[in-house]
Image (cartoon, rainbow, N blue to C red; front, side):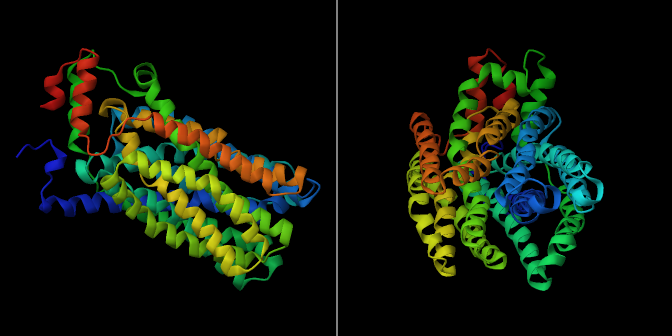
Amino acid sequence: MSTNKLSDTPVSEKSGLKKIVAASMVGTVVEWYEFFLYATAASLVFGKFFFPNAGSELDGIIAAFLTYAVGFIARPLGGIVFGQIGDKLGRKHTLQVTIIMVGVATFLMGCLPGFNSIGYWAPALLVILRFIQGFAVGGEWGGAVLLVAEHSPNKSRGFWSSWPQAAVPVGNLLATLVLLGMSWILPAEQFLSWGWRVAFWVSAFIVIIGYYIRTHVSEAPIFLEARAQVEADKAVSYGVLEVVKKYPKGIFGAMGLRFAENILYYIIVSFTIVYLKTVHSYDTSQLLLALLVAHIIHFLVIPQVGRLSDALGRKPVYLAGAILGSTWAFFAFPMFDTRNPWIIILAVTIGLCFHALMYAGQPAIMAEMFPTRMRYSGVSLGYQVTSIVAGSMAPIIATALLKNYGSWLPVAIYVAAACAITAIAVITLKETRGVSLHDIDDADARKHGLNTARVSS
């Protein structure tokens, strides 16, 4: 049996693969718990706590979401820096650094005084910590998914690499659960004054657990081979500049895939809270409970969609997500307007299921776009740069549309337009289901005149 063909991975190695998946998931849960904790707090608390003089309630929320967007602006920078490090030194070491950075930044957010205590220093410090948090998360995603994707068998890469994606709703679930518990236990005034801080402080404990687990993972053999080739052959390059120069189509393709998925997700998990609270004065606890249920279902659905992408192909599953996602807002907001908690939960859950059709297959698709020597940089750029114009702006644009037009219809049109862009990107892609990452490396070596012997060993 060839030792470098992952499609031939024997059953005995599956336990090792499961350990890799678990290590990637735990760290991802930690980092996205902290990242989404900020999103929920921005919707519920930060507008009043850090921007009390913003004017209307929607103005304060928009100001809070602008600081939220800072994290998205920092993410591509983190993707560039950690992508370069990850392609040179390895996925494991990068993931250890990012989890510590995001943990420290999040803990300190829970210690910040409000605007009434230190004036404009409060939002300024919030922005700085948010930047650090976003910078670290920008390097996290690529390393976590590639650690799994590069260990996975060719025929089931979609399934295995979807598990780190499933860790994202778990992180969001934990953030929602902690905030929900605090909102139930504490009166509204205490929750706004100090209760929300507890959720940020809790991150210190789970960061320690996540860091420990990540010290016990190993690099994929294919990465070690590619790194040895770069070290042995000085003509072989890697990293950000190389991927921009050699694979711009891959980067733009990844950005097109990411666009609608990212916008749809943040409309569902962030703007939904804004809409129901400001238009219908909906109870905070009920809102968080709706998200709690939806996140559980989202977690369960993602790996199954990953398996589906292995069976049917990457393109048809992703395209179905884009088409269905374009319809969601048109029926979801009327469901929100009923104010029926079960109907609201159903609307959010359907939206996240549509999202899963796009989200689950991303690690496999993007990993299959780039050779190993620059894969970390390629997927990080395509994934994180898009977040600036997609996810970071989605709640801001949607809130501004609601404020200016007093209707959800412009928001629905905005989501549908984003899905149309992604659908076009999917149609133009090459189907890569079942492809060997070694074959991708061999093709890259032949195309650019490199030594193929060390790639395919």
